[in-house]
Length: 304
Length: 309
Image (cartoon, rainbow over all chains, first blue to last red; front, side, top):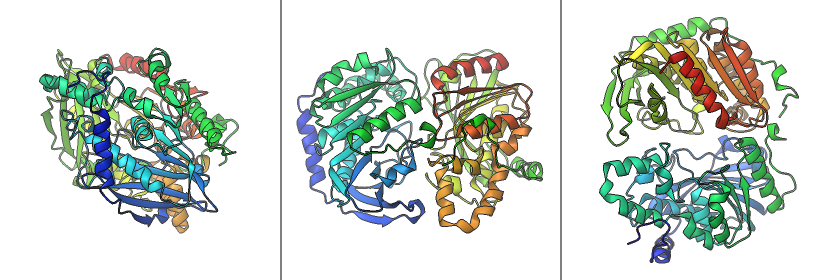
């Protein structure tokens, strides 16, 4: 048994191989339905339903530009919370003119909440005392299934597939080598328990809540978290990467993340947050458009 | 998109309906007739040695059940100031432990459609912003605003809360709801509003192509014949229409590069506020965060000055 998230579990590879093998035994069985409400003159929106492990049906918002493809992809991985937007709040809907976009609602999130509707707070510690039943094992499988489906679409350019998001983006890029680019913002799964001890803010406060009630399960929680810690996935990432670090001396700042960055297998750029959604967002947008070879970045009007 | 070279000079298209005060007086009266029926249960999982946390459920307009989180200092003597915390659009309401740790009796409401308040009504996201939008009497925000206002009823129902020291705070949709609650509930003595949503609805769909306002553009693309009805409806719910009724001290912070809630609408809202004690913090170089990293400290000081926790 591992007792620290720093220690890579001995069966780490087997744990994830088993998860992906379980996923592979299940057909995705896609159902695709146009959503006229969210379609525009430049892009068609679809609702996609897929089977993931469990088996469990999950939902995603797919948008395909009108016109001749193939197109680069922005795959938006689920963040902590009940809502997954068609495109992230604060970004330009105009990005759907140039990119295939896919926003996955993982199990427990809205539209993927039958029969399991997650609580927020609550999801982070759902079955956390057992790696085999921890809810995030299924969520990771959901993310991998979404990518598999995306790559079956003829409109997708397989040479330009960007995963964008928080912890699930890193983990998916590590487990699915066909992701070519990664924009990763660490949030939860890096030294999570250690960082939780220094905050009362959710989602990490969930860990504190859980262990106040069940202090005897600390080792089990640590063991489970070790299967999800970014440090163990980073060496598996072959995608060109932009890591969005927090500012200054934060535990998720550039200095603290230096070992993680060094361990990423591929070429990695680090952006230190300027504590401005505008400046950080514009940096990320320009990086992504440059790396994917899209001439015009999809900047919101107020960012131009 | 047509954005202003100088957003401070933007002139909003919002026209305050002549009967808006009567409309809301009627909705408030309908709500007041429904017993609050507050159910408060201690939550040992979410409580800590410093803060007691309670799950709250009460009844709101249309007899919809509303949930919320109530947090207060674990050890306190005498009455506490009450703080209503109102949520963003797609986020889940936070457990206000941070405010309780600062000495407030803090209530974080989940208006209808949010998790834990979606058993009877659940239009989802996207979708909530346009639900019933062709009729002011059925528009979802009629009840959504009342659910938030009832948070005031909950706070004043608590013996440990000093009803003369009540405040409201929120960011984004919460910033818009702060304005709404301050306008409709005179018990509110102080308010803070960050990057306010729900202000200049019809202006915003011309100023930004981002969600959530894009939901209204989506709706009108499918139902162009409903433009006038939609415009007429949202005028009753627009923070700019309600702002003249805000008379308590209030601070507003906006980001001049906000692509979610355009700064033009924030300026228009601020100008319309009736309060004599109001201050705008307009941050250049910031987006929808509206410089929260720095401004949070200003909010904490402002509320402490007026509510004396």
